[in-house]
Length: 331
Ligand code: GDP
Image (cartoon, rainbow, N blue to C red; front, side, top):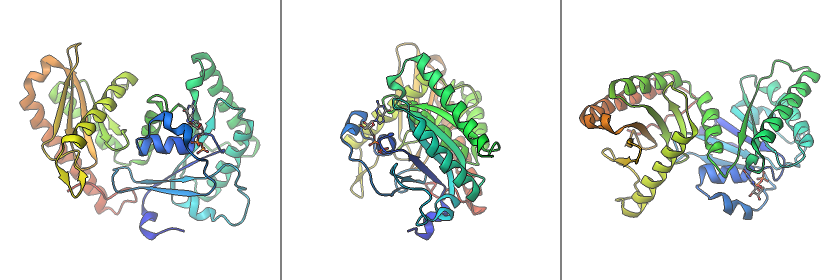
C-alpha cells in the first residue's frame, strides 16, 4: 500500500463524512480547480492517496476516506495510516446536521491518538460561505463544545483539537491549510525570523513565503496577518503564473513559471507596491510595501539575495539532520 520513500514525508490526512467537501478542498487547493467546478465532482468510494510531491514544496499526501468506511473494520492498518501522519484534518459540513460527523470525529481522533500522540488534530468547519457571521460563530462554538465534551466523556481530555472556519469559495481554505502546514514545518521560527529581518532592513510592511503551486504560505513575519493582504498576494501569484504559462520559456515541456531572476511588481492605487521574487523552484516571496520605500529597490534586491541564501541554508541544515519533512529545496 505504501512505498518506502513516502514514509519519510509528513502526511496530512484529510477525513470526514461523505459529501463533507474533502475532494473539493483537495482539488481547489492543490489542483487549481475553480470552486464552481466542484459541483460536478464524483463521490469517492475508495481510499485515494494523492501524492503532492513533484510540483509543490509542501510534500504531503491526502488520504480521502469515504464517509461510510467502518473504522473498526480490521482490514485497516491503523499503525500505518496514523503512524507517519503529521496532521489529521477532519472536515465537517457546517450546512448539514453535524451530530453524525461529531461521532465519527471522536472515533477517529481517539483511534489515531492511541497510535500516534504527536498528530495535530485540525477540524475544518467547512462550507461556512452559506452562514452569516453570527451563525458561523455559533456553529463553531457549538461544534467545539460538543467535540471536547465527547473527548472528555471518552477519557481523552488531553487531546487538543484546533478549529478553522473554511470555505472553498474564499481564501479561508488556503489560510486554514497554511496554518496546518506551518505546524509541521520545524524551521518555522527560523523562517519567521529571516522574514522579520528582511522587513526591517528593507522597509517592507508584510511578507509571505509562499508555496507557489498551492498558494499556502509556509511562513510570514510576526506582524498579524490580515486576510485582505493575503488575498492580494494570492492573486498576485495567480497573475504571475498565468502570464508565465502563456509567455514563459518552456522547460522540458512544462512552462517554467519562474527562474532565478524572475520578479514581478504590481503598483496599487493606494500607494502600495506588491513585489514577488522567486526563492527556489517551489517557493516565492511576496512583499507588501509603501511605494515611497520602493525607491530603494537596489537595497531591497540585495537584501533579498541575502534572504534567499539564508533560506537555502536553513533547509540544508535540516536535510543534513535527516529530517522527515522535506528534502526538495531547489538547487
Ligand atoms: P467529499 O465526498 O467529502 O469528497 O465531498 P465533495 O468534495 O464531493 O463535495 C460535496 C459537495 O459539497 C460538492 O457539491 C461541492 O461543490 C460542495 N462543497 C465543497 N466545499 C464547499 C464549500 O466550501 N462551500 C459550499 N457551499 N459547498 C461546498
